[in-house]
Length: 369
Ligand SMILES: [Zn+2]
Image (cartoon, rainbow, N blue to C red; front, top):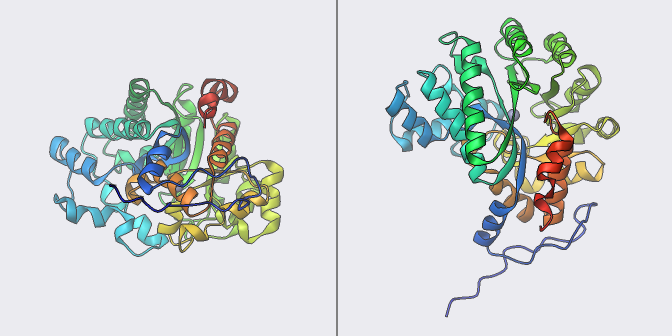
């Protein structure tokens, strides 16, 4: 007879101040993972640059060309995946080095975009906001950014139709590539017909490069109808979250978890209904929190701040969104009802061109959970 397995978790009731339902019955880790995979999910914060697994990278190098520091999977993994390294913001950013200037041709870039969408759909992500920097894939001018954008756009649309997932693309500019390049990319996004980008994101090194020089660009993007999300309050404190909301009119904040350090900033987020795009494992890998169980997400919710659960860079962190849901349940005591509420709130804060239509289309996905 099979040995009876010990219950894997029993979430403490009342951990959150939003107690929507009963805790899920005790399950084994495998059962819980299977259930979280089955759970329909929304991801508002995922970088295309961080979606390329070591296996995909090797496949691209072997099929389309492109120089890698190693062609052995075991040697490649620690160079591009965070779990192999000491947690830290700089160590995490280092993982993107191998990808810069790598992409050899159009086919390779299309393969990256198509695979990212396919893998999200396979994880039962129903709605994905996929952000990318055309400058990253253009490889220092090897390809025109307009062409790169067109290739990625088409590959995303193709994969979305093929795998039954709704994808909203967001443009990422980097604080690290300078204002001139960022301005040219934003101008390109504004010139493009509707459908290419529904939002603007700024990423990169928050410690060394302030978002302030980009303020005019944020304003220009908003005037042109793009939503705005700003990476802030991750490597630096609550001040950057306040600045992003009060001065740059951010609609959402990438991470923003250090808002927890300042009650006034949490109040501001609540008042303006600005959602924090939380990414649990990424925050551990960047050294923002020592472990998922120490994550302030529950306290943010208790303070009335809107939050969503996202992946950030699934391949760099070696995770999928289902893994993050498992952690939310086992480490933080979230129930199915909590997760459902986060997903519905994510849809309400989405950058989809017609939010109401999106909610009508997939809002019912969670009815039987
Ligand atoms: Zn990010």
